[in-house]
Length: 129
Image 1 (cartoon, helix red, strand yellow):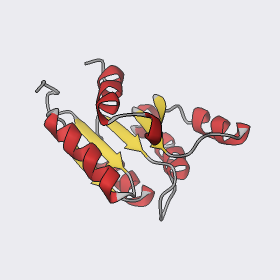
Image 2: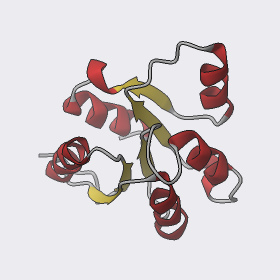
Image 3: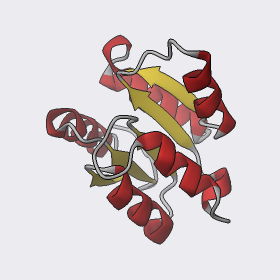
Image 4: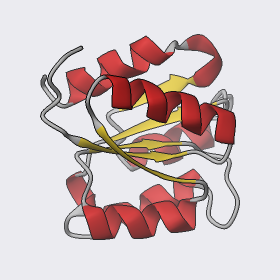
């Protein structure tokens, strides 16, 4: 397909079919993929493996995506780690939008409004590929 130079993407998504579909698509595009099904495990993987980019869901067990992102941003490495928020949450409150924007995600994508190929395109855009 294309050459992603094995860049590592961390997919943090609690819905297994969605996590598998994203992981499979990224693998087809020659990305190295690691995955977690909750924010707590995702944070541990992020801080240990230092992926090139993190795809982050908001509503998850153990630790939600906003808490995970807040904790990530307090880490020296995690402060500037590229994150794409990928969720079903429609930010209908000013507070939700403010919370997300305060933690500097590269993009905010609504799952129902984006294709797998569009996710790959956004990742490549963020990683300047």
